[in-house]
Image (cartoon, rainbow, N blue to C red; front, top):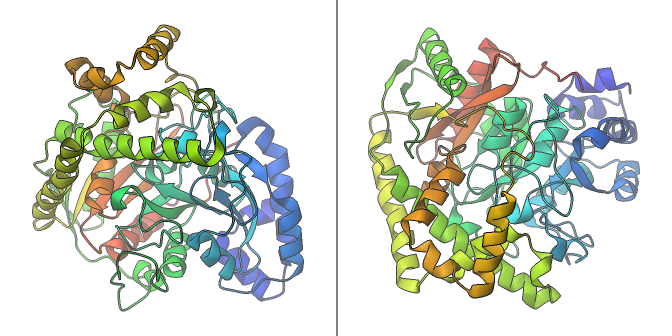
Amino acid sequence: MEYADYRRYDATGLAELVARGEVSPAELLETAIGRAEAVDGRLNAIVRPMYEQARKRAAEQPEGPLGGVPFLIKDLLQDYAGLPTGSGSRALRDLPRPRHSRVVERWLAAGLVVFGKTNTPEFGAKGITEPEVNGPTRNPWALDRTPGGSSGGSAAAVAAGVVPMAGANDGGGSIRIPAACCGLFGLKPGRGLVPSGPDHAEYLQGAATDGVLSRTVRDSALMLDLLTAEPDPSGPYLPARPDTGYVDQAARPPGRLRIGFTTRSPLDTPVDPEAVAAVEDAARLLADLGHDVEPAEPRIDGHRLAEDFLAVWYTGLAADVAHVRRVTGARDTDFELDTRLMAAAGRSMRAPAYFAANHRWNEHSRTLAAFHAEYDLLLTPTLACPPVRVGELDTPPALRTAGELLLRLRLVGPLVRTPQWRRTVTANLAAVPFTQLANLTGRPAMSVPLHRTAEGLPLGVQFVGGLGSEGTLLALAASLEEARPWAHLEPAL
């Protein structure tokens, strides 16, 4: 199959071609590999090719709703038996995993042909994808820009046409941020809906979940049907699923929705005019489609929410680093400086302070629920600015030197409790202040690629729904996709 023909289809369409016998899984795989080899030297999206395994699987004619469709999985939490899950870390790049993650099992059961693992920042801890061990991934729309993170490798591969859909996960925006950067659709499902097993009950106290990045809404809807078809027997919840599947819900009109929108950063940091324009343009489009749209936002203290989110994030990272040390014997130099600083901040937190921060998550959830009692959806920018340049967020040399000194002197703990640290936290989240709300509260949220900047860069807008609103989000996204199609847009590379 020629690449131009391959690119015309989404994953659902490719599966239909295979089912009708018009193309074989092997032909699709070779086209995908050819595209990867043609563009990945410039993108650095795929960090572990799996061509041998994939060719064997394609030859077996895998069956399922997505039988024979080429697919990439993220090199974080998405374990493939016998291969390392590197997590963007030097410490894990050579440690094979003993079994598949539950989501990988379900992807394989759906008939997908996995032929590689995609780049991610170390432990998924940043909104960019520039790990020291693998090097930076670049945005297909502008090679000097980031594709976002932490699912940046998957986003770059989908945007560049290597695959129509790829594995991703989202603990603080890691599906929605790269979707916004790369002109893709990205849905973060609500807490507990997608299984995290067998090695985890849930990720990050339920704030993180697996999912995909795609070019079309119907592909994401189908994937949510496949991932949630059965409860995880080792999971902590028995999630409620709708009476009809997500594909069916996405195909229905969303009805008249009441949508509140804001362009104000919850951290009171600057929001680029392009991000403001993206939301205002989306609000006009929604009104034209018959929805009730007005300025409104939940009454949440954004600074408090950021601190409460990062309290759990840092302590979780500290636990991850300690676990990797025990399992691998890794040394300090096997972890990036920023990772060691965040882990040290986590170790410095006392148990009562951690418990209090985690308890306040419920306060934020109640406040957001009060908003959703009045509005169906919250509309915000996904990002506070267009995709930043690769290397723009590197820790400056002087701060690296200071960080190393603080670690040696064991002074990170006292620093965490100072106003200077709080200002540092605010600065680090300034580009992505909108996405953590949905993670912390466990609500579904999506980024929809409705806007292009004056430079031609994608810049998505975010919708946050109430509990169980995945179907509403998908139905709205499908109507927006019909009104302003985006799947045909392709970077020149």
